[in-house]
Image (cartoon, rainbow, N blue to C red; front, side, top):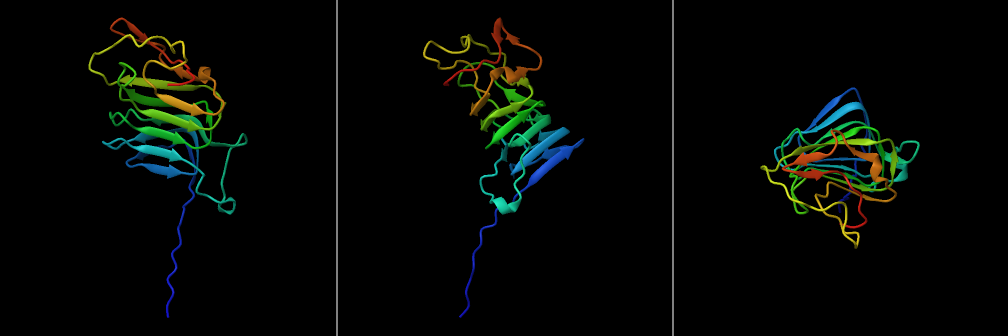
Length: 193
């Protein structure tokens, strides 16, 4: 008799880019990412995900982390603006080490607006990440309130969420506050959204 074996293969991709550009045409999964003076451009015409997660790996598969246990070191640019699509996501299942930039498409309007999104399930380490926002709304603006209401629930457009130890001052709008039709938009940290 013959026996059939099924084996699940979880590829581990430890990725370091130096002085490079990656035009990402479909969703991608990495175990570790280190950007050094490099750009990742979202190039699909549909919303696309870049997921950085070591969770499917085992210790003998060579999981890399930075000295501070970060699985994503950003000293380059994550460019979600290049495809002019709302809904792209950057998902990091571990610590994030900043110092680079993220460019995002957002409908700057109110709490329910469509946007590209960053989710970090870990601690934020390292330097300031500059955030570039491209407004994709059609001339609309509204008073979303400032920061959060009395119960701590946030107003405005949620563009990033961190689970772990975070300091909102480590995310900075690269061009300063967005002023649109008399309303002012800026980055605020809130406990709950």
